[in-house]
Structure formats: structure tokens, C-alpha cells
Image (cartoon, rainbow, N blue to C red; front, side):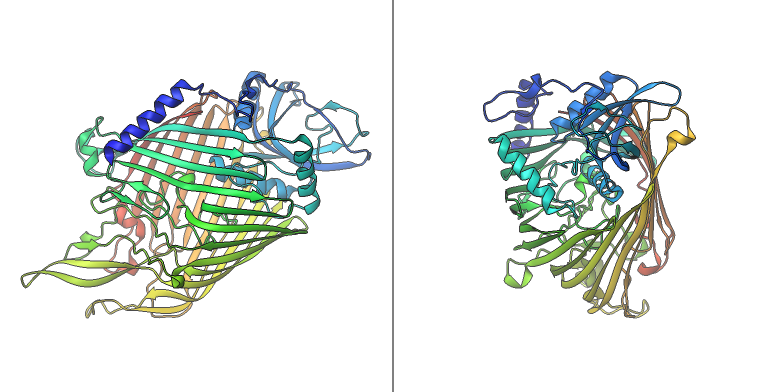
Length: 626
């Protein structure tokens, strides 16, 4: 299988090199859109016929002092399926700036939601600008910039792979968009984009030579493709990983994708040195009032940024704990889904016929959970349990969303496999009559859950609250450490988990003269708790996540500082990152992650971060987007 992976990966590289890396979407006639003229920096817009003063909210990707840089950003966004706009404006000193907007909206909450969806899809921050605009006569065109007229009637910025995912979109808007599509009579269109990335991890928490501390050298190719019309199309997002042992043969001893060769139910093909996954691979069919999908899907339920209690369906990829990219954290599940637009409400129903377990680092991996130092015997653990293909193990749920007074809200319900696995001390492994290891067994239980989420924009803040309740969540029964009985028992109890926080879009241009970056501060509190006594607490709970991100010099330099604090037992992750975007598709990043965690004589008294306290890493990334 390793040979097949290497051959496929090299074939893909050759194919991409033969194609123009900057190739734009190709229509049904095989014509490139590369010759399509770029709009002038000062975009002409149409406005309403009223003369009232209104407030509009623009989702700004960047603001550049050089028009050429802004046009480059515009091109890359358009290649990915967005509908960006460029507007020029002068600051108080008379300097000319060129802003690239995803869209302009009447409602601040809608703008905040579009900004969040963009960050989820692209992993990059955007900035919401408040525009006090005076609407001029209909049909009259004027340069669009802050303080003058804007096309505030635009209602949605398309996020690739998340079409129709924005709650609160009115039926009238959808009908208008559908009518526009029918008038233009678009044929089938093929669109693709992606990136090739090299990533390396060097451990700084232990001593040894560079080769010994170099834990990962990986090439990743992410390819997103869509073929079809507006209503009927095939969509896929694939990730191909190849571990580069020729750079350091010893690194392979401490980093593996899987214990052995395997094919998962969601078409993930894995070996020790390579992997190919299709987390999104579905057929979409939709009309003016509905949308149906079948295939591997990722569901963006919930409003929280770090931990999503109402994200019931997609298990987590925990092979690097919390250090995988945002687009790699969730595992796609084969499923059927339908979204129905009922006036001001949106109903989404999901059915998952087979169970997909979370992915854990295999034994011996640098990121494998190592708790042997806390016990007198070595611990041997199984891979996460995969439930059989049985009608009793299917998952299904629904979510109803709406928007009222600038507040986006939804309620949801779910019945099916719990994506949080339990790990049970099961038995002592004997060699003759001598104990040699403790066997830990993973177990998945069926759970019922009900949840809600709320998101609202308050000035420069977007606040979020998300919670889920279960009347029958399984947990491990506590035991006295002086008289343990194997195997550990499981009991069911009432359980609640919630995440509350906010995004603060910092107006740095008011604090730092000529600052045009997109500064955002994110705060979130997460807790997962059994309401009945006698059960061990969940592994991740009582966690504070803070993040500050900003960009400088027309978006060339990016900076992010993240702190994760496990408050119950005292654990901390400090994670700064700096990057440089050449704005020609090439970008580089350098990050450091320091991990601290308090230890104890019992599992429930030890921070989960304690088991990774020697895994401090320097992470270097080189990425080329095509």
C-alpha cells in the first residue's frame, strides 16, 4: 500500500505541474476564466432609491496600500468560489487603501456569521467594518468606500463546501438567487483548488540529537473539487499525506498514521507512512426550498470556536491532540442529509447508517497517550471501538435554526453512537503467573442528546453560547484505588456540556495609526460534567481557550497567540505562531507549543496535558496554494 500511496502522490504532483497552478475555474465549454477582467479598484455599485442613512457591515479580508496586492487577494478568493469586491478609500491622512470585501450586509450578526464561517473554512481571520452609508438614487453609480454608498443588498458570501449553511437566510433571498441562476443558465462547471504543504515537528522537551528530536516530516496535499451546476453537483475534499523518511529515517520510529494498513468505512486508506482520506465526498441536489446530500460529510453545527457540544456526528482526529489544522480536526461520516428552508426557519435532518470512531495516535507514536509512569505496570490499549453495522447503532438527528432581531439561534436533537469513547481498565495480562501489563479497552455507547446554540453581534463583539444535555450518557464508575476490581464498570447518568465565549474584532486602526490588519481576540470557556455522583469526570473539561490574531503590512505578516488552560487540575498550552504570506500562493509559518500539566496519584486528579509535558514542539510549515 505504501508503494501505491507514493505512486499516487507523485502522479498528482506531475499532473499539477503540467497544469497552470494559477488555473481558474473552467466552464462547460472548456474555456478558462483567466481572461475575465479584474474589476477596477474603485468598484461601481447600485444602491437603493431611499435617501435614508443606514448602517452596513462589511466582511473585510484585507486592506492593502498597493492595488496590485489587493487584486491578487481578489483573484485567489474568486478562484475558491467566493464573490469578493474591491473598494478604495482614503484614511484621515489622505492615504489610499484598497479593501477586499467578502460582502456587505445590513445585519451585523449576519456579517459576524459569514466571518466565522470563512475562518472555519480557510483558517484565516477576517475583520468586520461598520460602514455608515448614505443611500443614493437607484441606478446612480458612485465609488464605494467607507463613508459613502455601498451595495448593502448583497446578502450572502459563499463559503466553499458550506453552501446554505447560514441560518436566518430569508426565503425571498433564496428565490431571488435561484431566479438569477436560472436567467443566466449556467451549465456544468468544474472548480478546484487546494494546497501542497510541508510540515516538520521538532521536539524541544527532551534531550538528544536533532535527528532524534525530529518527530515529523510530512507532505500534505489538500484538493477540493466541485463539478456540476448550481443545484446538482459532486463535491469532494481529499487529503493525501506522505511521511518523508528520506529526510530522517529515525523519525518514522515515532510517528505513524496507523498501526498497520487499513481501509475505514469513510474511505480513509491508511498505512504507517501514508494516508488518503475523503472527509467530504458527496452528491448535492437542491432547489429553491430544499437541499439533499449523500456521501461523506462534515456538519458545522454549533457556534463555539474550540469545543462544540452540539457537534454530535463527526468524531475527532486526536492523533496530534489539539495541534492539527482546523480543517483536519473533524472526521467525515458517510451520511444522508436534507436541509429545508421553511420561511424564516431552516431545518436540517441527518442520518448516519454506520458508526465511525474517533482516530487516536497508534501505540508508539510521539502523540500516543503515555500514562505508564503513573502505574506500576505498562498499559496496553486497544484502538477505539467500531460498532457493528446494525440498525441499533445508526445515528440520526435534526437541527432547527432561525434568526430574530440580529440573534441567530438553533435547537437540535440526536440519538446514536457517542463520539466520546470510554477507556476501561479491563484485565491484567499475565506471563505465566507474573503480571506484565494492564489491558485498557475502549467502548462506545449509544446516547441521546438535546442542545441549543445562540450567536449575536453586539458592536465589535460576537457572543456565543452552545450547550447539550444527555439523560443517558455512559461513564466509568469510580473505584477505591486501594481495592481495584477489574474490569471497571459503566453506568449511565445525566450529563451536560456547554461552551460560552466571544469574538472581539479589535478596532486596531483606532489604536495604531495606519494599522490595516485584522485583529481578533477570542475567548471561550468549556465544561463537560456528569450531574450524578460516582462517575469519573470526562477527559476534557473546565478548559479556557484564548486566542489573539492579527496581521500587518497589507496582510503579509500574520501573528497568532493561543493559550489553552485546563483549570481543574492545572494544565497549560502556550502556542504562539508567526507567518509570512507572499501573496502569490506561497506562505510560511513558524510556531512553538509549550505544554505543562500537573500530575497526581489518581487519574481524576491528573491533568490530561500532564501526559504530554515532554512533547513541546517547534512546528515549521511551508504551503503553496493552487
